[in-house]
Length: 97
Image 1: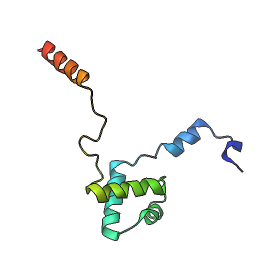
Image 2: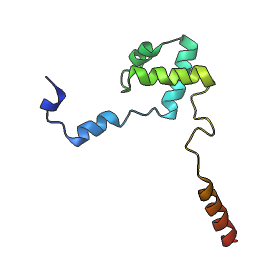
Image 3: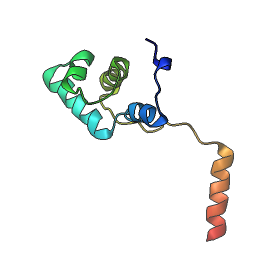
């Protein structure tokens, strides 16, 4: 039976999707298990059954680990700020002095 036939509340849906992002502790734990035991994505999923995550999200995390050597966000990986914003922040800083 399809999911739309069930009466899910917004709290049910929020509870499922609230754990989609890995915490720093989860990332470090998965990194260590991957490096020490050589576990792949499916083995990590079975090792941590209480963590709700998909195989693709674990594969993406492991690929990041292999490519960069870390599971942390790299500097400069966020959206760049505009030059106008930087000028405005400098102007505000100078005016406050």
